[in-house]
Length: 448
RNA sequence: GGCGGCGUGGCCGAGUGGUUUAGGCAAGGGCCUGCAAAGCCCUGCACAGCGGUUCGAUUCCGCUCGCCGCCUCCA
Image (tube, rainbow, N blue to C red; front, side, top):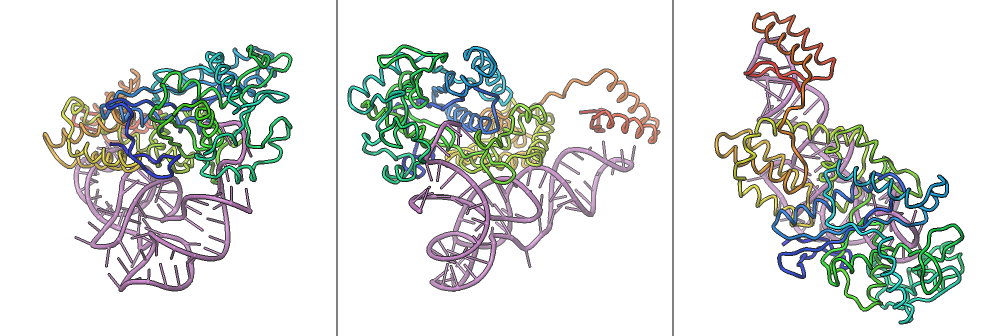
């Protein structure tokens, strides 16, 4: 069984599903108020890998990831642009799914939208108000964090130290009774989108949607709740507090991925403004290079991304493609069971993809240094591991070569058959100048 | 201030109390090649600093220095 670091426990533990053979996970998705950045790219790849791996291991995985389509930043952008908030949200959601597809991230089984669940959220808030866990203040309904006895579990800090450390500015609204309280329902200002509620027209606070949608779709006691490390507190803490106050069991396990950092080692974040566009990066490099780089770092470690790291990863992808072309026939062979067992051992140990990938590269080397059935089985394991389990597609098909290039290649073969090396070299230089790599094999000149 | 993490060879990035190496990229040498490319083989005496524990520490403990995260919207 897979072992994973559980944020709530603070150590690596067995990930026993509540129902044998099944696995339910909820990943906190994006707020669609802008283009995805590198951090989004990482968390989606990390949890996509976990999902694929568990599926590959034979579990029936149900993967739910939300889209936050109503939120302050969306409203702010809509107002700045003079367009409706729905328009902003749907535009960036379109870009989101398009980007995910380029990254090789599978679509969730379900992707609930916050705006589709407002009545359920109002229902939850109502129950929380009734039971005394929430209260109405000047500008909205707030959750009384201190009413939950183990508040601070995910933060791994007791409540009083959280309270002591809370920024004063954060509570300057003057509405909260305690600085650790958080808003469940924001009353609408004129011109803001709103839904009806017993407390007046307004919109849900961010921390409420994920509780309602995860419980609504996966039921109580679902297996795993994940997201970026920066969501562990306060977002996930607050979700958990609501579920608990509502008498629900909520997620059995919690897992969080590490942050992307810039060249200076500082976390990329919207507030600092040092985020890098994921779209630009995917335009500039093979998207698989980013995916491989994510795999080569442990999911909990901070990860630096820059031109150098991406070029390095792109080179490695290229190497894998060369292998995939040479060993394309092995795709249909039975993978070497020992190789797969070793791979599983690494993955089961807290999703150690760096080691798993290293093992994959070792297999590439191993396949090339043996012959016959053994080489074929090892090569088949390479495909099995990278493509099926990790979701990194390898290209066995050469890319389409334009007619003019093929003609030059033919001319070069002809020159070589005449042993006219200077003519052959001149053509090679010409092809190189056009960005093609020329290789001479038994069947003549090939380009890629 | 509270809680937590990190510091590894040119770069990214794993890992471990002790025969021999993570892996990728880059670099150097060799094989192959008309020359290349691709591939294969070989090469780097890495573990912030200072002490301590130990037969032995990069790995355990302490201290110092440096960097970072969370406590605030954030993946």
